[in-house]
Length: 287
Image (cartoon, rainbow, N blue to C red):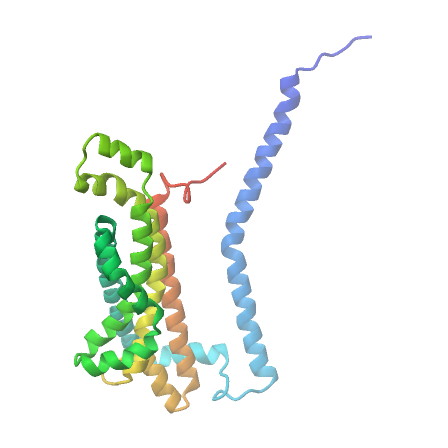
């Protein structure tokens, strides 16, 4: 009786390929599901909203359907989109000032213990005090409406940048600190070549939080300011629509604010991914 010898490598080969194929199929499914599932759930939620309005015959001045809200978004575009541009301008200017101020103050705190002990209590007080209670005082003492709006949005946005960047600057590897000290590196060289690269992931984490907070601060400040005119933001348009019981316009403005927040978060997440994907553990892909 002839005995056929089998190569063990040939036995393992198909199983290994099948396992790789299964992993590749699972990754492909996850990549598709990451985009499809949120869109499907969102579509179901919008359809449920539509059915609730139709089945219960809810009048549009109580709860407008999604179709009417989209129609209002288009018919009132000459009112809503200029207001969106005003809110965006305040948001991005406040975020820019928050980045400059937060990073600058964090570097100062990392370089000087006395500066940190002197100024950190003010930063904490500004952060823990609700902006709604501070904003009326700001608009009393500051005549310029734009400066008042920027200051309100900046107060909300700058603390995450300050706190995260300070933590990152202090988290540099102590062995590397000792190495820089042994080679007699200057304080400036240690900051540029060691502390700032170590703080980058922390700063980007703070930036993702600060982006959304800058938008919230801008909207809250516009609510408190409550003044109309050509340079009115979305918050004033919501107030105005509320006074007129124009509920569809209120929903349309809210949708613009929500979409703006999502876009800001997506943009800051993309910046973080591009900056960290090649070297930081949080963004490296594992097999």
